[in-house]
Each structure stands twice: as structure tokens, then as C-alpha cells.
Length: 221
Length: 128
Image (cartoon, rainbow over all chains, first blue to last red; front, side, top):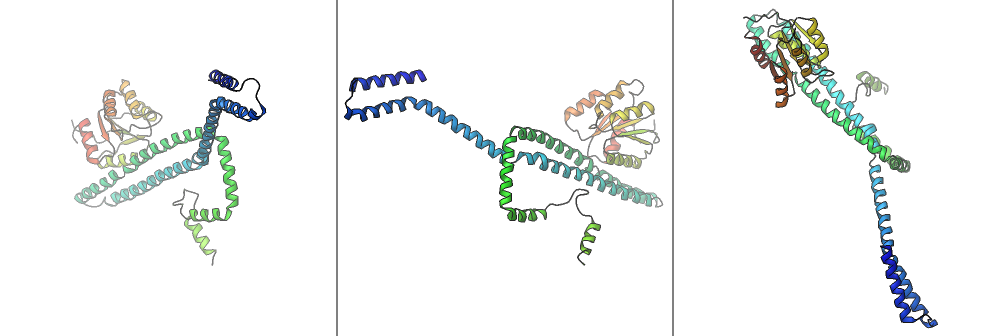
């Protein structure tokens, strides 16, 4: 490409020499200079275009990386996925507790029926069997949730890889976010306060129990 | 031959809730001599130490799965004759085939009911 450009440039300069000769009158200097400039620019255009394309590509890649970093994949790995898995674990625990409570009550019903006649005992046993059968839902939901948790952990691993690859951009995005947060502190505070009212059931040890709520209410008296 | 309802049964599942459900359903069927284990390896230890007449086991357990447990039981000359019912949510045909090839006596898909449990036990032990 460069050799072809040189050849073309040499031919065009030769053509100018043939047209104006080796000694150019002063009044034609501007024309010759213009034509020489055109030759020079023309010869360099392919290299300039290539450089420009590469620069555009670099800018595009940089912007893409910044956009990915601004999505804050580090938050997904550090906060969102662990929070989701904790919630799912809490579901399994809550359903297990509820299932055991149901079975406690069912066993008490069976024990209370020990003195009834056989027909009545059989009738109640049919009903309690159905309760035990229904309780198998806990085992199935537990297994399904375990599969989801495993999938989330796989996603977490991939996100961790992404975070590592974009660590510089993520740090820049964090710094940029901090500047914005500082500038809009009041707005951010209002948004956070709004979100705080919609966090749903709390995990064990994270929320207030009834005693805490009672004490808090009493503190207003 | 009549089924001895005092026979010793080993139930194996890593979900304690499921062990409790199985124990209650078996009690309602008249079988109260029930021991339990929470995975294949602890179940295999109990098999070697005990005298069980029926094993009812889950498949999906760690570190030893129900299928590995079944294979170990079938590979043990002294205990390979024990009827083995798999009770599992693994319902793909390849699972059933693998269990059958490993020597399972019957196969129950979760969720199940008392009627299915009784029917599979009858098919393995005889009517009761």
C-alpha cells in the first residue's frame, strides 16, 4: 500500500514537472504549491484513513468498556446475587419450618384419636395421610430452589470474571458515581428512603421482631 | 408368605422433612420399625451393621448418591438381596433405566402419595 502510494506520488510530481518545467515563474508558484499539496495529501489519504479508523475503533472499544463498567457488574457479584441466594435459602428454611409445624399438629391429631373407635380412626388416618403427602412439596421446592441457587452461583463466577477484566473501568465508574452522588446528595437520599420502604420480608436477624417494634412504638409515648 | 409388619426398614433422605413424612406414612401402613440415614455412605454403614428387610432411599444426596448406595448394596454379597425402593424427584427415563440396571426393586417419583408407596411395597414384599 505504501509503495503504491509512493509510486503514484512520484508520477504526479513528474507530471507537474513536465507541465511547469524545472524553473517556475513567481506568478505560478502558488499554482504549483497547490498541486504539490494536493499530491501530498492524496498520497497520504489511505494511511490517514487507516489511522482514523483505528482511532475510531479504539474509541468505540473504550466507550463500550465504560458502558459495561457503568452497569456495575461488581454490584451484581457482590450484592445482588448473594442477596438473592440468601432469600432463596430463607424460603427453604421457612417452608421446612412450616412443614414441620403442620406435621407436629397432624401427629397430635393422630395421638388424640387413639381412644376413638376404629372406623373413626381410619377416617382420620386417611385425612392425615393426605396431609403428609401434601407435605412432600417442601422436598420438591427445596430441590428446585437448590438448582436455582447453583445456577446463580455459576452466574456469579462469570460476573466475577467480567469484573476482573473491567476492573479499571469499574473503578472509574465508581468514582464517577460518587461524584454524581455527592452532587445530588439530597435527591439520592429521597430515592433511598423510598426504596427502604419496599424491601419485603427481612432475613433472620436483619429485621425487627415484634418486641423490637413494640419497644419502638412505646418510645414515642 | 405374610409380610411381617415388624420388619426392619431403612429410610434414606437428606431432607429431614422427607424422612419424617416417610416414617409417618410407614407407621400408618403398620410399619413402625424404621431406622433412618441422611446420605448413602451413612446408610451403607447402617446396612452393614443392621438387619434390614427393606431399603427406601432418595437418589439426590451427597456425598454418596442413592444410586451409588444401591450399587454398593448390590455389590455386597451379604446384603445384596435386600429389596431396594428408590424414592426420588429424578424422573427422567435415563434415571429409571440406570436404577434398574443397578438392581433397584422399584421406583417412586416424588411427590408421591401413601397409595403409591403401599403399592410399590406390595410389589416388592408381597401383599399386606
